[in-house]
Length: 159
Image (cartoon, rainbow, N blue to C red; front, side, top):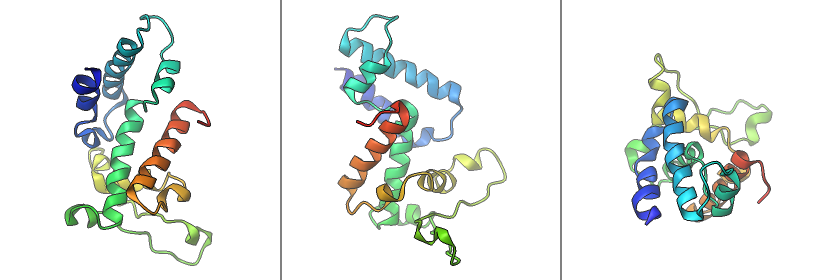
């Protein structure tokens, strides 16, 4: 029931939440933590992080980043619509040490709202992910490696 009515709604179009202010993301996080308490029968004042880890749920911000990065992966590998693929451009390499990196060009925006667009946010997030994740050979492999990376980043664990 929780998955059908709560987590599916949190994930629906969550790529649109990219770049929202932290106060709004925190409201969604409260809903997610309440759902975790409901599933695990955890009391209101008990620490929720161990429950989130045991459920293997990414926090809201990481779920949003996951969706944006998955769209970027698909766009870069020809698995997304052309209008998304056309928004991402690989950085021109100039014979430096960063040649080994698979970086994307981050366009400049003139407003704070421009930084929230897919063409600005996706390259920024992509450039922060390790090369080993970006070079995944398939979508399923990319999703698995990306979730592990984001999970470790969120909870500071090695699982």
